[in-house]
Length: 526
Image 1 (cartoon, rainbow, N blue to C red):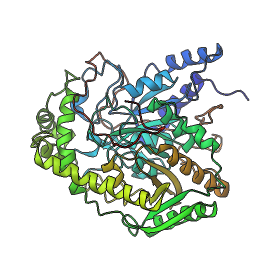
Image 2: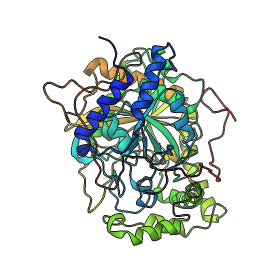
Image 3: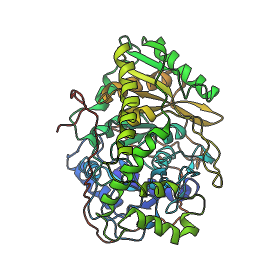
C-alpha cells in the first residue's frame, strides 16, 4: 500500500477537524494555504527532493506564535480582528524550511493562563473551551491545551506549544502525548507572545518520543539528531543510567497516579537502570516566583505589542479593553494577574531581583545539587493527575503536577504517557540540568519502548471512531500518518478561519536570561 501523499493527509486532517472539531475545540484558526503548501511538498518529493524527516508533516501552532497571515491572539479578543503578523516567528520559519505544513493555530489558555485567578485551563475568550479527547467533560490542561488535544485527537501529526511553568508538560500528561519543554534558549522565542522572558520556551508535542525528538532537532536549528539518539538506544540495557527520585511534592497528592509512576521505576530498574531513591528538592512556593513573572510579563508584552501596531500598545490598554468587553472577556474570571503586572516597575526593581535570585537558587541549585552529588543521568517525577472535570464557574483544582524547579531554572523536561486511570491518561516527567535534552530523550524513549513491549501502543481516544473507521495513525518517519476517521474543530469564541493583512515584524527588545554553564551538543551556538 502506497503511503498517503501530503495533500491526501491534509484532506483527511481537515475532514477530521470538520467532523469532531466542535467536540474537542482544539483548533481555533485554520490555514487556508495548507493544501497548496502540501501540493508543493508532494511535487518536491516526486522530483526526488526530500527536505528531511519532517517533510510533509502536519503541524498546529499554539495561538501565541506569530504566523504570517494568520491570526495570533494568545487567546485574547484584544488581539483578534486586527492585522495578523507580517512575519513568521523564527521557529515557524524553521518548520517551513523542514517541509512542514501548518494546518492551523491551536487554542490556548488566554495569555498563557496568566490573566487571573480562578481560570479554567483550555478556555480563552477567542477560542472558547478546549476539551480532553479522552473524556470530553474533563480538562485538556494548559496553557498549551489545543496543541496537546489536537495531537491526541488525531487532528495533526505534531503540535507546538510553549511552556513557562508546566504549559507543555501538563497538557501532554493529561492528553496522553509526549511533550518536550527544552532548556530556555535552545529554541528561539522571537515572535512569541511572551509571559516570562527568562522562563519561556517553545517545544514539540507528539504521539511518541521519537517524533517529538525529530521536531526538537528542527526547532533548535542544531545539528543534533535527537531522533537518531532515540533509535540508537538499547531500551533493554540501561546499565549506566542513574535515575534520581525526589520524593517531595507532588508525591503523595494522588495515590493512583503515584502507583503508575512506581511502575515506571520498576520497568527502568528491570532494564538495568540504577534508581537513587528518597531524594529531596527544596520547597518551591509559587509565590516566590510571582514577582519575577509579573515584572517580566509587562516588559515583554509591551515590547511584543509594539510589533502589532493595530493592537493595544500597553498592558494598561489591554486591561481597559477587557473591562470594556467584560461580558465576553471576563465572563468566568477576572484579570488580577494583568492588574498586578501593570503595577510593576521594570526589571531594575528590587522585588524583581529578589524573586529572580530566589527562583534560580531553589530551581537550579536544587536540581544541580541532586544531579552532581548523586552522579545522575536524570530525575524522575510524577506527571499530573488524570484530567479533572471542567468547572468554568469555579476554575481548576490542582493538577498535582511538577514543573516549578525546572521552570525556574530554565531546565528541560520530557513528559511521556505512562498509564490510564478511569480511561484518562497520566504521564511521567524526566528532567535534568541545562542542555541535557539528548540524555532525557534517550531515557524517555527507552521507557516508552519498554512499556509498549509489555502493553502495546498507548491507548488512543475513542472519540469519533466507528467500526468502519481505522485508528488514528501514529506517524512513522518513512510512512504515512493521520488516519481516516473523524474528529474535530469548533470554537465557542470568535476564532476565525481566514487570514487578514500585514503587521510589523517581531522585535523582542527585552533579554531572556538563559542558563549558563559549559556548552555541549545541545547548547545553541552564540
